[in-house]
Length: 78
Image (cartoon, rainbow, N blue to C red; front, side):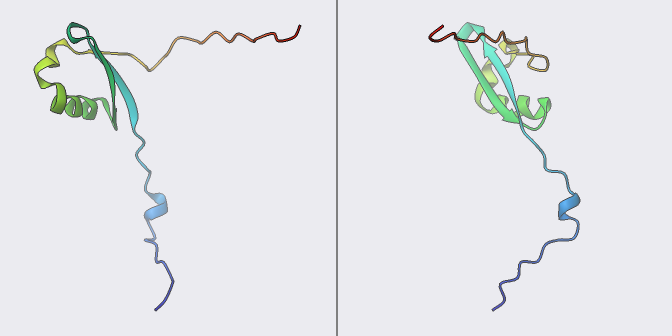
């Protein structure tokens, strides 16, 4: 009958967990992929479900400090 939505009083104080992309590769199988997870341990658990037989071959990419991107401007009509 009522169109009132009740919110929990603590709901705005709870931080929202953000997922990150964790990139990995399996050189022997020519696989380069990523998994979306909350932490590195979570990423390893998610990758285990699909690539468990290749876990000892997985190389994790370090994306914490990516190399700077060179910005090049295109000069049109000059």
